[in-house]
Image 1 (cartoon, rainbow, N blue to C red):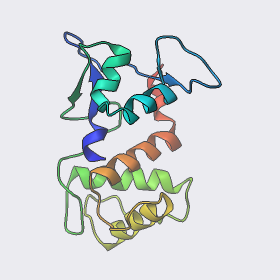
Image 2 (image 1 turned 180 degrees about the vertical axis):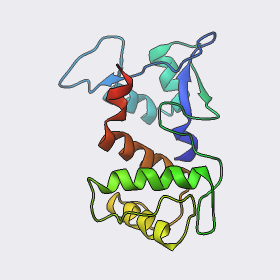
Image 3 (image 1 turned 45 degrees about the vertical axis):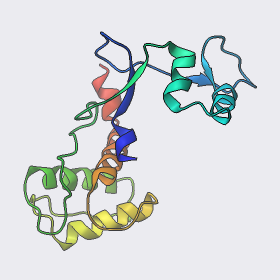
Length: 163
C-alpha cells in the first residue's frame, strides 16, 4: 500500500497526475474510458497494470512516484512516530487526533505538547481500532495518511481550500 499511495498515472511533459476513471461497463457505458470488466478481461489475458492503462490511455502513459504527497495538511515525515518521538510532526498528529475525537469521542483527547507519550499512543491505538487498522500504537506511513484523511473529512478543510 505504501508504494501504491504515492504512485500516479502521467504522460511525458505533464507535471500533474492524470485524472483516470472508469465506468462499470454494465450500468453505464463510457466509450474510450477504462471499464471495470474491460480491464478485468485484459488482466485475465495476462496484461500487466501498466499494459492495461496503456491500452486505454495510450502507449506514452507511465507510472511515476511522488516523493511527497500534497493536498493533505502535512506530508508523512519519513519516519515512524512512536513513544519517545518529539517535535512538530508529533504535534501535528496530536492536533489532528483531537479534532477527529470531536466526531469520534471514543478517541481520547491528548495533550498537544509535541511529545509522543502513552496518552498519544493510546489515542493512536483507538483510532487504528475504529478505522480497522493494525493496532500498533505507532504512526507509520499508512496511519499518518489515514489520520490526515479523516482529519480533512471531519474538519471539511478540503472544502475550505476550494474557495
